[in-house]
Amino acid sequence: MTKMIQCISPVDGRVWAERPALTLDEARAAAARAKAAQKDWAARPLAERIALVQAGVAKLNEMKDQVVEELAWQMGRPTRFGGEFGGVNDRTAYMSEIAADSLAPMVVEDSDRFKRQIAREAVGVVFIIAPWNYPYLTTINTLVPALIAGNTVVLKHATQTMLVGERLAEAFHAAGVPGDVFQNVYLTHDVTEALIQERAFNFSNFTGSVGGGANIERAAAGTFTGLGLELGGKDPGYVMDDADLDAAVDSLMDGAMFNAGQCCCGIERIYVHESLYDAFVEKSVAWVNALKLGNPFDADSTIGPMANKRFAAVVREQVAEAIAAGAKPLIDPANFPADDGGAYLAPQILVNVDHSMRVMKEESFGPVVGIMKVSSDAEAIALMNDSPYGLTCSLWTSNPDRAAEIGAQIETGTVFMNRCDYLDPALCWTGCKDTGRGGSLSVLGFYSVTRPKSYHLKKVTK
Image (cartoon, rainbow, N blue to C red; front, side):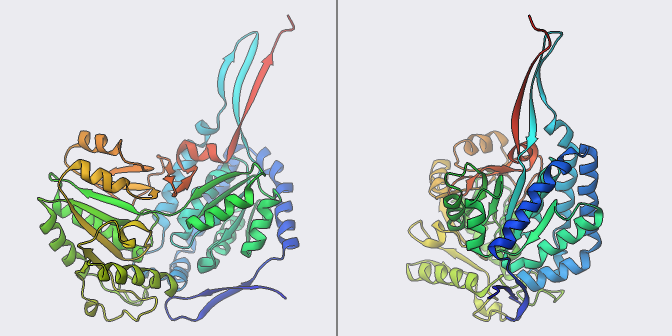
């Protein structure tokens, strides 16, 4: 019996889209087609591959109205924010710009006797398992460098955003990228793991939960398949005594609440120096109370439903546990009448929190943030490092040297000063600890989807 994969819309709880999952044999055939197409794709000139990828993204831009509406139905983001096109375009442009230099051979010697160099060669077939929270951006992070470098790509998108893969494939195919070079597929978890176990792919990139990443690692064990894993996060902010208070409130609250808190690098816990603590909390409460929770198609809505009611249930549980343990909620849910006990969830700020509470240690991935008072940099550093995760941290100070000194002591992938919840395509997007391993974007993003190949060419026989 054919397994149907369904997207339940958080907007109204109905089955909004469904597609049949591929059987294992059908999935094997798709992977085989990708493998067969790879050599010809890699043989095309680099400039041609870049042009086709750029044309694919341009075609996607032509679908903007459709894409924005579909995102609202699939994962609840308000249409007022217009999709993810700014980041998609910027990342594509940057990776295209640096491709020639990034993929150029590293020449060690080119004399009358020897030519010695290290080339970058496409790994082969790249498998992308993409998440729903930023479904276009997270796919583009790997899709663009993979195709430019000469790989073929098989994309399995999250059930919650199942049409994103279709739109990307539609756009890239319309631009001239061959169908077997970039394929969108619908797979169950067991078929996904079976393909990885069978070495159907040369590199697998997964963005999602820690548990999902562990399953991918187990499936790949002993296959020597390359893996890129961006998993959970519990990103901290630290507001120092010399911070710009208003700027810190505006950015950190936006970092905590945008996309209903469903951001890989969203701010989930904040530490504030005691001299600014009361003012920071007061201003943050006012900032959050100005949000409007509602239907994502309502132009006034600044925060929509979470992508699934089960995700909202996790946040509700964490908040309830924290309050029972002594935390104080500062946002009255009555200010957000759209909270329906399901996917629509009122935002929350908690104080009187500590690290014995799940809301301060485990990933929430929703519109809740805990705020703690600290008296020193050393205390803040210890608390920021007291986490199984390490994706980003956000430091607020007027002193760049102080930020750099503190940043060097934090176990994280990216250190921000006076900003947060941002991805710079010129810098490697990476993490440590349970956040995962590997890196995307920047020159290192090209290294993830290529392998080094050494040439030692002796031009003489004596």
